[in-house]
Image 1 (cartoon, rainbow, N blue to C red):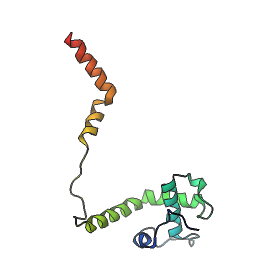
Image 2 (image 1 turned 180 degrees about the vertical axis):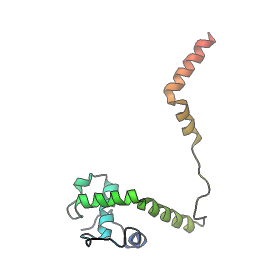
Image 3 (image 1 turned 30 degrees about the horizontal axis):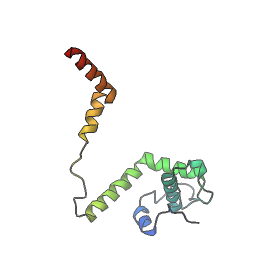
Image 4 (image 1 turned 90 degrees about the vertical axis):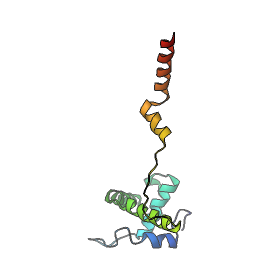
Length: 129
């Protein structure tokens, strides 16, 4: 049974080389593609791991794979590769050379938000009398 969250053959062709192509120990019970489909299902629907539909691999196996890939830096590696592909397709340098921080957000955090602004205005008003 397929879900709208399942990755396409084209997407799998990009992702297939990433997750642990060779595993030590016992052979895999579940295909890597099906594990990724299950992770995508949780990510897209927001369901709890334990509520994965029964036609996916067992939730605990999927969760452990996600956790292991997260801690090994695999997801960051995949995102870097996808970013490079998108930038090349757009005719840009594969690696970004500039980062932008919204200065308004930084100012708000530095001042302590609206509550700090209110206190500052009250003090200013009291000094004017």
